[in-house]
Length: 349
Image (spheres, rainbow, N blue to C red):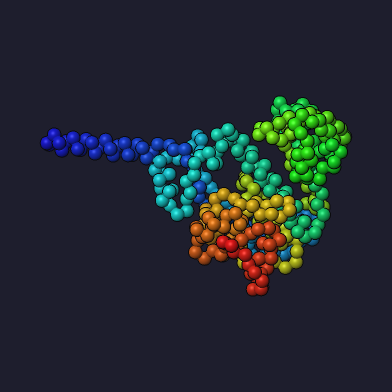
């Protein structure tokens, strides 16, 4: 074989080997694909109602109100290879995103899983509060310490689980309200925190310090709203985490507590976080969630306003996008679809 031909052959083999090896190299990206979708009006994997209500009259429901999820591949300790990433970039139902968008560098895998579980639990409470408030059912709010930051004034004085009764004599009614009370203090001021632990009331005088921005006075506690409901709502979703099913939980609770099926037998899916006041928030993975919904049979997809632009660009054929701004407006939109009367907010607007 001529030397030039031999050289080209060897070079081609080397390039091919490098390409193969390179394609198998782990890369710091995560592949997002459509995940499971579950009907909040149906049963869980064990045959139990996904949402069970005790102590209150419930009504028959029909149709679907499905929440949607995203499945991921990759991450620290199990990174995808370059070939998988390139294939995902070319796929219509896969998103390839930087690893740190799913796994922040300052958090361990266990911390991320715990945070996802916490977000799901908070989402369920917020969903129940929003649904009951929509129905005019009284909800009692408690402000509870979720975490105490080490080295801050509250460290060693207050504990997770303590209920905040008042700050500087102002009764605690919500986390937002306590944040406003704290905002009236300057860095270095002393605040009096009245709290309850194990049924007993206590007071603590704490000198405020600056937050990481150096602009706000804080004592180093993380607060959360907890709600006392007049009856029991049990939501069973297994190991699914995150807050994005909040809207669909609220809709299902409202449907079960009111006569007449909200969906009128339609297959409706959707996504969106929800606040106790009923505000719907944007989520991640909207493209994959729409694909999962359509594959499951949904014809209507409830879309947070903040996701509308991305949703319109990636909408699967046969899926109608309905913009979800609040729980109230979303229920009105579904009713308008059922009756053919009234405006139905769409994406984009």
